[in-house]
Image 1 (cartoon, rainbow, N blue to C red):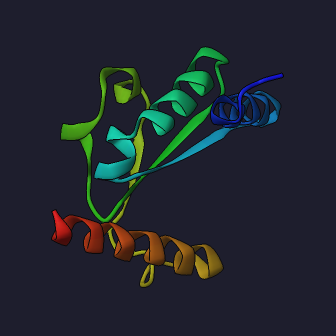
Image 2 (image 1 turned 180 degrees about the horizontal axis):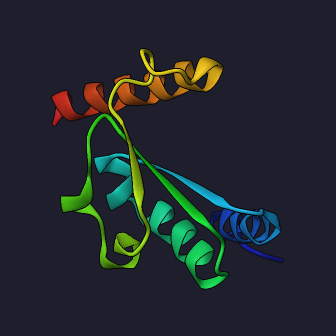
Length: 104
């Protein structure tokens, strides 16, 4: 039996392997997150097309070498861009990042 704490890795790896592509919602927090690094590493090793959406600004200066070869799309203001329902979700993520950064 897989310990509960490691189960998410198995589930994430299985989901990534079954996916046609991998979308990374890049923020300063996600680029430094060990779980996110694990997930994009799996996607890169499995040669999945990787779509990186930099939320709020370009995060190239924070981008690890493993992601540098993959182009990014900067989504400065998801609420004003034509993203529909996805834009609402991206706006909420951006707002959460701003709140987190202000507490540091």
